[in-house]
Image (tube, rainbow, N blue to C red; front, side, top):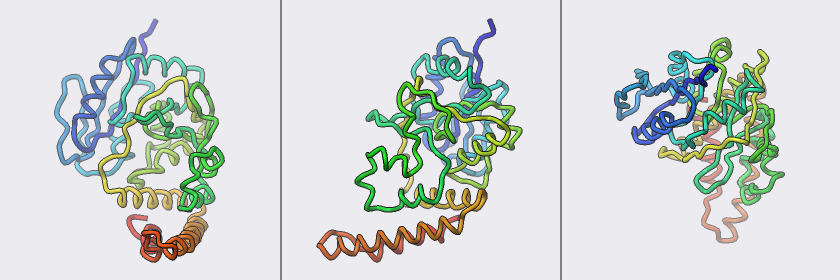
Amino acid sequence: MKPLEVSAVIPHFGPPAPTLALIESLRSQASVSVQIIVSDDASPEPFPDVDGVCVVRRPVNGGFGSAVNSGMAQADKEYALVLNSDLELGPGFIRDLLAAAKPWQPAVVSPQVVGRDGSTQWVGRHFPTALHQTVEWLSPLARYRHLKLLHEAVGHDTRCVDGAVVPVDWVFGAAMLIPVAAFRQVGGFDEGFFMNSEEVDLQRRLKDIGIPSVFLGTSCVMHEGGGSSDPTRRRQWLVDSRLRYARKWGGERALKLALSSASAANYVVNRTRQFLGRDIDARATLRVELSYLTGGNS
């Protein structure tokens, strides 16, 4: 029987320790041969040379999609597992994922992804709409986002629970098994996205050539998440990417109008809270929210 083989592509930026730990877990995977590729996205601290690891050194920082594209260019297996560097994998993770994914191949497949507290990161999602993003933008609804109805309203596919196997519109990009030939056929990630939305854009293009996306809740990884970057920058990257996605697939003007209207609604609520003595500057908050729609690289 042919041994299980997979390429593992790890986009890297920042301290090397998490990526080195992930490499060790990849080396200890049971019953699988793993080609390990680290794509150093011009990290301030260059990733060290490691025996048995292909290290791709990018000259400029281009973001997640660009880093993955550089790594995927070196992949020599039929399937590649794209992994965030801050994941923790069990010793049989890849073997079990490949076995569970086999009936669906070729497909983009993701396991369940949870945080350290065990909370799900909502891997399976619906294609984004202006309504999803408007509901998410409405700050008064934040206190209700633990409810299933609100998860669906912001685009999470709530069928994707532990143990479920569900074809979905798209899967979150922390841990994706991708058929390499199909990835190359559609041109890989659109490098115009710096961070966020690149995985849904890719999966829409893959669906156009008959490659589905599947959530495999029978496998699970732990994702540290959060990162060390400024939350303001992270939100600007998110908004920039969503506007680019809407420009590419239709609905940019509608999205901007909807989010501007949501900011106006937030302002009314915040003014009331400010009047009641809450520690909030409604006008300043409005300015910040509207700035995300006009600033950055959108």
